[in-house]
Image (cartoon, rainbow, N blue to C red):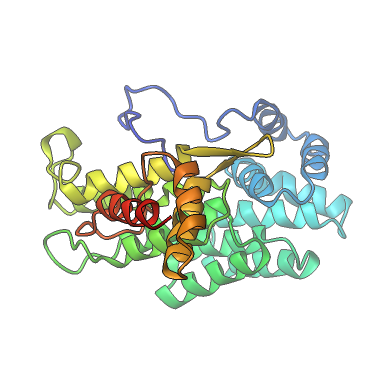
Amino acid sequence: MTPPPLGRPRNKDGPAFDPALDDTELAAVRDALARGRWTEARRLLAETGEDWDRRGHRLVVLAEGAASSAWAREWQLAEPDSPDAAALLACATVCRAVRGQEIPEVARAACLTAARMAPADPTPWLGILILARRTGTDDERVRAFDQVRARHRDHHHAHHLMAACLAEHQTGDRDDPLHEVYDFASWAAEQAPADSPLAVLPVVAHAERYRVLARAGVEPHDPARSGHWATRRARQVMKAAFDWWLEWDVDDGTAHPRRKVDLNYLAHAKLHEGRPAEAAALLTRIGPHATQAPWSYPDQDARKAFRAARRAALGSA
């Protein structure tokens, strides 16, 4: 369910990709569950609590095992009121449905049962979104995503899944720079909190589109032979997204990502309000390099606008 990281070989001779990532405790519990020791999964999920991103990741990884649904059913028989057992069974049933081993309606029903047992948990709706990506309609995918976001608005896995779903809409024989996946990724980056990895979702959108275009034969399977990543727009998107994620400012001893962007916008607001001295102070704090927001259009030169605004503010102060 989790896509391979960018740059990793995807062929069978490449290094193995472990969906558990660096969660060594999850990897150990997954191995224990494969041997029928579901009590360790119960402990892990109880410790995870309401860390929804981590809970979703852990449940999906645990659910991918070939025997996970069987052991989840055994757990549920022992503890029929356990929302964790219901969530694991729901995700495992979704995995089976995606592999063609279960009827999609059965998987969806299991997810809805788990959702009723834990109304605040976005994970059962994440399961429905995973299922809808393979077997559902556009409306079903959007509804599932909205349900996840209503419970945890910055759910990383759900946003990555929606980017993948939207990227798979291919109506022509070329890439469209106005494709909806780019708008979605830009919107999500704009909405994300200051410390969210969703700031790099515009880069993910480009990677997902390239995957779809290569599969359709529009782009070569080797990215090095493609112009997709060499276009001005692609370079701007990647640079802006990583600037957005990596640039920091320190306030009261605390480092805040994206603060430079916030200050940049605030400085321009002060300038337009006729308060040039305050704008000049903010622009001085930002430093000589403006940060271009990841949803900026390629025909807008953020740095040029920044320098003009800075000169205007400092000249009026």
